[in-house]
Length: 419
Image 1 (cartoon, rainbow, N blue to C red):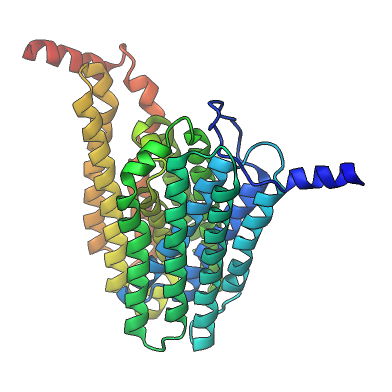
Image 2: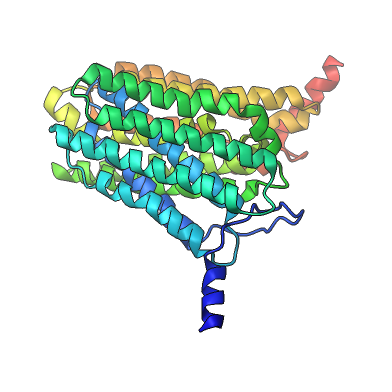
């Protein structure tokens, strides 16, 4: 009995910061962490169902709620990456389970038509944040051998979660849309912009390669993106199949192709772009990337129904869709230009030069979409072309940087003439 109690107590010990002894324990994402990601992705996908992004106001409100939920996931994920190890730690699992539990009530919400639903939504998030704050304080204060810098950072983050939970509780009992939106803005700005900016120097020092397994963190981000794609595909198929037409099958094929091309580009960027590794713990950077995926497919999934009712794509949806497409192309171009400035050999620049030519054509597609936005089929075909241009250089990456490639030879000759 004593042996059993001793074994049981060892399973419920507070977690110790990974790598604090100089030995970083490398591991892959655990099934427990995958379940955590799934719960949060389902909660985020619920937003598109609740708001349907019918107006710019819905879009902004969904943006704020996405930021609040995603910041919660990002904090929990960073914590599990830094404190969870290969061996089973039931204390950590039990605590994280308690954080997930209130989200189930949020997922059960069917609409925001009654104030009771708003109360359930706010209180669910508030309870999750309170529990997370208690977990952070408990783990940091009671666990031995923790880094002082990291301990202070997480104690500060726990205070942030408590303040956000108090604001959410206040928002739950305010029956005024304007005040409700203002409180959401305050919470989102604090968690995504202000607090990370205040802790920027501390995060850079404490989340060093010694203490943060960045490869695992990147793996978690990619898994999260995969789950968002999966939830988006379900939403797309459901919306198109609601009012089936002879073209429904074609719509589904086109949308799936668009989603696949977008995912291919993101996965390739993650593999080749070192900036993503460097920004692995940048909350706002990753939130924007995930929100683009979340929003663009929420909009795409509703295109057939919208055009059926309005005979054209409403201006609010068109603005949102074009803004996201322009942001993707511009960010893509910015990264390419940044790499071009770093490279000195013409042969190393080949891929980015070819890729940039594709990006210029992506801007042209945005202009065409502005003109031909009255047809579902044309919209999907233009989007397919857009994302095809987004990835067209990727299959030829190895070939383009080969010295025997005609384009590489041409650039080398041109460079020699210039010299």
